[in-house]
Length: 240
Image 1 (tube, helix red, strand yellow):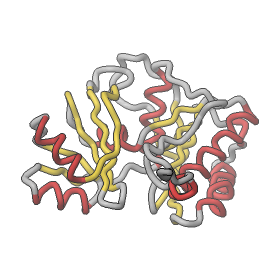
Image 2 (spheres, one colour):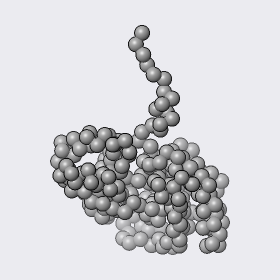
Image 3 (spheres, helix red, strand yellow):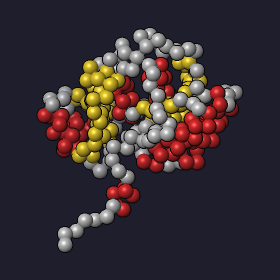
Image 4 (tube, one colour):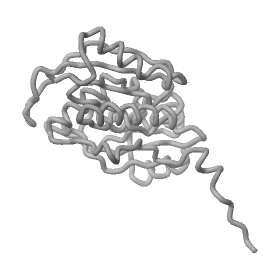
């Protein structure tokens, strides 16, 4: 299988091409997928760079778009513009060649990068003193190792209140701001590298082998909140 991974969820993105010799059985251990190439993308230029980067990546490895067997995409939460560009690109590729797609939450990828098991809480900086958080039940013996319990967005104060109420002792995050603020309130924070396109491709491949597929017709980004354009264009209600 030829796997294309795409991540435009943050300030820095990437595209990866992986080759898997065969699908694994759901109970199989290890990862038969090998990375052919990982290419970085500059944030803010996704609309200009993404499609040419994919084309160049395939050309360097002697492949055509029609030969892609699986597309993995980071579905958010994250950059509104970046996510929309990735989703539109993925839909175009998938619909043109009937290629299966697996969308992977950024929070899920962070939870899996923690290399912990049981309940794992991942957090991302949502800006405006807000936090994206995702709680997952991780069992690495399963074909689909991360089962979502919940994903949400809250103010940092609201997030801290939930941590206190549920007696959460540790949080995993790639963001320095979140890690620092958690440490200040006595929560053990584990700083991780932000997942890239290669990581999303590997997660998607495992999910695909367990039967997970995205419906391309309804595929959308996992924003968790509305964009500024939607917020500021909403009609303001007054009292007569």
